[in-house]
Image (cartoon, rainbow, N blue to C red):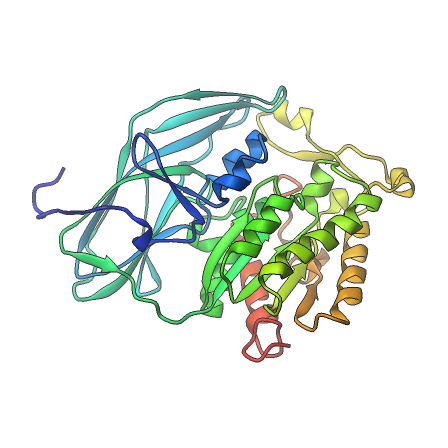
Length: 394
């Protein structure tokens, strides 16, 4: 540890953690969770367990005069067999709301995943330290956004001046649920996922329940939304149901109604925005499942293909077009008695013209530039004048 600073260690507690629904005490430190224990106990799916423990939108927030900060963490890094190594997760340092520094750490645990078989192997590794120095002097609001796509246990926080929990600034809380695109997919960093960017532009506090591969209308997720205090709520539904080929139209419609009913039990009058899928050409008219393209894998690339048949829509299989039409119909039906329920066609965030300019690199997930565009558009459409999240509502 450098000796030029007089370090003060502050316990990492819920008082300085934002964006997590629960903190688990582990053998090493604290593990942020984005689903509560009761929800996690109701599903043994490894993909869900991995996604909800990746701290998208989770950050440490405090006031301090410190000019140097260290955070000891134990990351879990993913390795996919046959695919080039993933970059290390990024930590974003925000000072008074502005991105001031970024860092990564090596080491940590490794989870090796074989996409061909679905198997995964865990190997333990050492903790690491992320360090930021040269912060401006004087009292300031500091946030450390944890890697959105890398499970991160929090071990110790050190600063060269005392800290105190960030005060409540009276901002509204925006609770959002969606798929890997909302989770962050290929965003450049945790504060530049599209929900994080939209939250910053909208001046709200984000709780991001974007769960990679796991936006599946699960009742336990609906209950987590129901039980989480929030001023604004959005749910982005569709792509994972096609990816997994999970249900047919007959099941989809009542499942959406049930999901919304559960959310409304805890938030009867909260502005609630239902967002349909962004454009994804491989699944616009072709049902799932989505499968890795073996030709791309053999070349060391990860790309996806639609494995369904468009003709199967006649028997109730879901494509994105089918889902968009049904979500619009459901919201129109319900909004007659629920004036705070709103709908947004996801193609207003990313549509055909955007795909021509910024194609999806793996056919499913937007890149960093697209995350920025989506965040700016959502902020304008939802938080801007006349939007459902604007002061006074639509």
